[in-house]
Amino acid sequence: MKILVLGGSLMRKTNVGHLAHHFNMNILSGEEGLGREITVTDLSRPGLQLAGYYSYYAEERIQLFGLTEVTFYKTLSREERLERMNFLMQGQTPCFCVTRNLPVPDEMIEVSNTYNVPVLQSPLATTTLVGKVTNYLENRLAPTTTIHGVLTDIYGVGVLIMGASGIGKSEAALELVKRGHRLVADDAVEIRQTQGGQLSGSAPELIQHLLEIRGVGIINVMTMFGAGAVRNVKNIEMVVQLELWEPHKMYERLGLDEETVKIMDMEIPIITVPVRPGRNLAVIIEVAAMNFRLKRMGYNAAVHFSRKQSDAILEDAEADL
Image 1 (cartoon, helix red, strand yellow):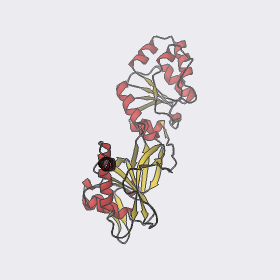
Image 2 (cartoon, helix red, strand yellow; image 1 turned 180 degrees about the horizontal axis):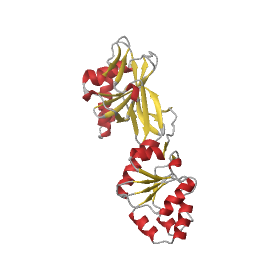
Image 3 (cartoon, rainbow, N blue to C red; image 1 turned 180 degrees about the vertical axis):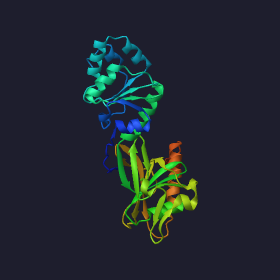
């Protein structure tokens, strides 16, 4: 198995201001801290800290105050409330989110303005807000990289076509679109590694749905072939590497040896397709995607052929005895 490494990952960033704007939250205090960075996707409900347990506090997380936290907080004396808030609003704490449009205690507003830690208010229920904010942060903070290539959706398989400039990647993608498949990105593919371990590919907004064909120019695939010919995002499941045919190089003929390419932290199956006049690259890539689907469903034609060949050799050997 051969492993190549492509692209270095870039950690993305977001801040409290982006979060408040995206979810249309009310900013109650600490406006000067809206530029605080959010660095983790986990959220925290500081019930133990409100009860006076200070041994551990995940200060880098967004702190959620739901009905339970607010109700318990009201049972504390003013001195205890100020003590708890001064502990919770430490340097790295991005913000506090109060759910269900619950009334915010005066002590929280007071300490928030002192340390410039924003207090946000949302009408959503706590569990609903947790799910939405977690998904949002996973998308915003996921490691990303950009790779030169063409990403297509062939029979539901995300195929990343790579190769030297001018080798025919875009032309193969155009033929695949004409055969009923879908274009995701041409020339530059933005890849994001999700929390679930998937590599999600998309096109930069500037060149979304565009395809460059040398001699023709830039075409808009969605305008020319319809909305069904494109999609915005697709998980990358296999890579097809195009390279010029080298007469003395040994290319895979059976398909028993599987190679992988390492993109960020994930290993993706890769096949190398030699390019020379007369070869229909689109059909070859299409068949490669279909064969990948068969393998995923449990049928490997190369392994099946190898077993039949071994059985035939064994039968011949037994017949000669």
